[in-house]
Amino acid sequence: MTADRPILEIHDVRKSFGGVHALAGCGFSVGEGEIVGLIGPNGSGKTTLFNTIVGYLPLDDGRILYRGENVTGLPPYQIARKGIGRTFQVTRIFPKMTLLENVTLPTGSADANDRAYELLELVGLADLQDEYASDLSFGQQRLLSIIQVLMLDPWLILLDEPAAGVNPVMQKKLLELIHYLNEEGRTFLIIEHNMDVVMNNCERVVVLSMGEKIAEGSPDEVRRDEAVLTAYFGA
Amino acid sequence: MTWRRAVPYVGATGLIAYAVLAGTAPLFLGPAALSLLFLTLYYVCLAGAWNFFSGFSGYINFGFVLFVGLGMYASVIGFVDFKMGLIPGYLTGGLVSAIVAAVIGYPLLRIRGAYFAISMLALAEGARVLISTKYLTPLTRGGAGMPVLAGNLTQKYYAIFLLAVCIVLATMFFARSYFGLSLIAVREDESAASGLAVNTTAVKVSAFVVSAFFAGTAGGIQATFLHYIEPFAAFDIKYTMLSIVMAMFGGLGTVLGAVIGAVTLQLISDYVWLHLGQANITVFGLILVCLVIWMPDGVVVRLKEMGILPKTRWI
Ligand SMILES: Nc1ncnc2c1ncn2[C@@H]1O[C@H](COP(=O)(O)OP(=O)(O)OP(=O)(O)O)[C@@H](O)[C@H]1O
Ligand SMILES: [Mg+2]
Image (spheres, rainbow over the protein chains, first blue to last red):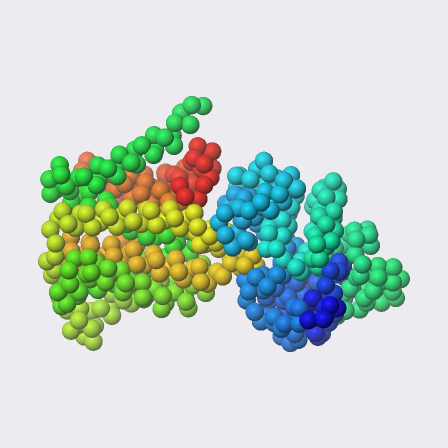
């Protein structure tokens, strides 16, 4: 494996729901160790792309490679075991499981490890570790779902609007955590509507519109791009 | 409040006392009382076996009696036609049910919710009809049924007692393990669980097979207790319904729920039967409705939510 082989390669993926072309031939790659922002207007196919990468939705056409290996069509649990983790736009946790159980499950063991306690501490949920996740506020559930994915020990982390509904203090902590994990060599692909978050934290941005990639580049390049302005604000 | 803190200790003491008394019952109980206790333990087994899969996974099995009935037939055929000993005969019942569960589990457990429930219901009915057809009559004796003479009451009693203990302990280890944790996660959010590296199909099918094994073994023991089986008795939907009601009453997806449900409801139904005669079904039904409104997830789950019992999986 060469050092600069991309960790994720998306080749011309297509996915339709009836007449809706959610992904209409879209392709880009993400390099090992990058933090890439994925932006685009509502309904542009960002979440659908995540769903196809992690095996939740079968592709109509196209290929997805993880570290050079074709992972198209694998079941979600195998993709997760290979090291791809994702969070959901609408938070999904296991309500009638304790916080500790929620974060232990992804490790493939029933016994909580040190990292579970560390991460719970980090997001301020350590005191609630033996309570059911259903008792948490929405913001807390969001934080729980993010550390849950980290417990997979993933090397490619897909976050679907991680900052939505999280208070500014926690948001700052979350971004610190992302950068810390990035220093460890972990790669992030982040869907985010908050432009400040994207501009300040991503090295590179990919822009989707109507299921196609319309731009790709540094935050500054993308911000000045004609096609992007048209997609967001109309002609 | 102090009584809250006393509940777990009183409960644990009661449970141990019950186990000790039940374990020594043949020494001091006459045949009539022993038979009643046998039935209670039989329902502990059924409710426990049902709960092992459905309580933990959330896939409500309405065709559970399929495994009970198959176990009855398999073990009775073992005793009558193959002259098996008591324990090999009972285990044959469990094994046959487990094998059938493994075969039907893979296709069935891919469909969610109501479809799974309806398919299981249909399969249980289908098995009853199949057992009576002329193709299987040489083996099953069709509608004429099969008499069976195996073991004495004390032996059968100890068999059901041991099975009940095994089921409770197995459920406890299961609940503590990653296997049990991942089945609970399937119940809570199956696709989220698969995204967190849980092989959901494997987990569901395995638990389904274990549940069927317990049900089939219990069926075999019950068949020798009844001395006679025929299709309607072996595949009686009553066994499914009582297992569900008892497990739900005690607490779905808990270890002690099935025990508490089976013992309590068996006591209530005996009492109601004794004092109210024909009205018992109605009164029993009303009691159930009240209980379900008050504690929709069952006693143990309610106590955990109230903070009286700790929220540990192995209780
Ligand atoms: N399961 C589905 N069934 C039918 N249509 C779907 C499904 N999932 C997505 N779509 C459609 O595909 C298109 C892309 O949706 P997607 O959720 O990927 O957009 P998005 O970029 O994540 O939008 P947002 O920023 O609002 O989250 C939309 O038109 C949506 O209605
Ligand atoms: Mg989306």
